[in-house]
Image 1 (cartoon, rainbow, N blue to C red):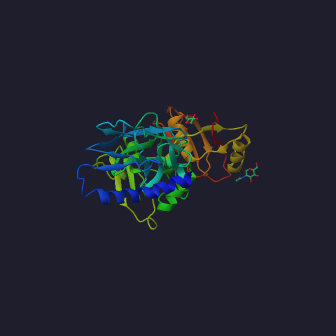
Image 2 (spheres, rainbow, N blue to C red; image 1 turned 90 degrees about the vertical axis):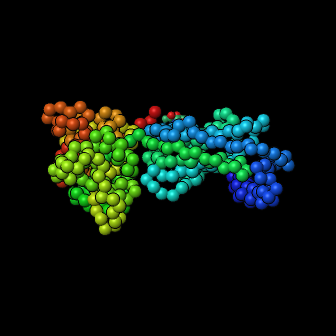
Image 3 (cartoon, protein in one colour; image 1 turned 135 degrees about the vertical axis):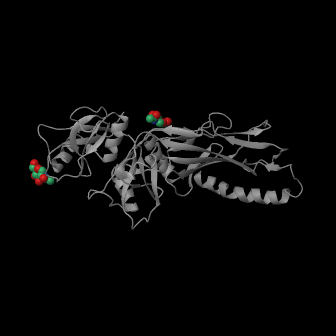
Length: 363
Ligand SMILES: *[C@@H]1O[C@H](CO)[C@@H](O)[C@H](O)[C@H]1NC(C)=O
Ligand SMILES: *[C@@H]1O[C@H](CO)[C@@H](O)[C@H](O)[C@H]1NC(C)=O
């Protein structure tokens, strides 16, 4: 069936084109459509100024990682048609971090095909005539971006776009050797290793509005290097510069080194473990495994802090060899007076602490 669909899709533009060439000279505003997709049908529909319209009820959709989302899109004709017509609907994706247009799904009538990373995770809703909403399941961190819903009926081709944003948290990350050790590719890898991805400018900007104040510059997904300042201060560009997200612009991807801003979203749970004694790094990893869990990654700790209210004053080992803790309700003897994830850097592996573990929850 899939092969058949591909053949039809390949044929459509040619048929339309040759038809247009022969029909165009004689009919100016009187487009002639032919229902090429219905077998045994040589029924020709005569349109007089009929227009195809496409729009979306919501310009942006917010969703959670691992959850579902519906991107609305509907089409209709003006004036309305008496009988329904079969159209081609195509959804394409423009990744939030930049990158090429990617096919998501193509459908004609009730037949559809989804592509690559979206295979088996997307379908058309088709709840009512003209409904072309895209239903997405098992949302992944990198699904965010702009989605275009395109409807093609013969010569008419209309589209609309919907933004998909994932609820998440932006966090600054440094190489174990310290400040400014990451090339662009190193930054990308560092985020992935922490169960996160390079943050986009929009995500960093949103975090700045929510109060992220960080004096070290970090890579973003678009290859620029920036840092968010909510409280201007001396070692940070001085008091005179206004608060804002400050940019060094696009930097050389291999030669220049900075920190990175990663974007993470909650899926699963993070918890602190400290058996009868504190542990070195090896023992910490084992302790999580014995509990049917894994030692937590930094992105998971930040997401649990932001979305699950993780609040624990004891320092614990993390998967990358750093030691951290997360505080949502600041209190005495528990670090600075603002909520946050505190870091003790990367202590020697024989030092002893508790551990933060991570488990995917199975509902
Ligand atoms: C997502 O949709 C699937 C299938 O429609 C459903 O089984 C699942 O429970 C939904 N998940 C969430 C988080 O709503
Ligand atoms: C951690 O302690 C165990 C003994 O419990 C020891 O075998 C191991 O070498 C130690 N690892 C490190 C990194 O210190």
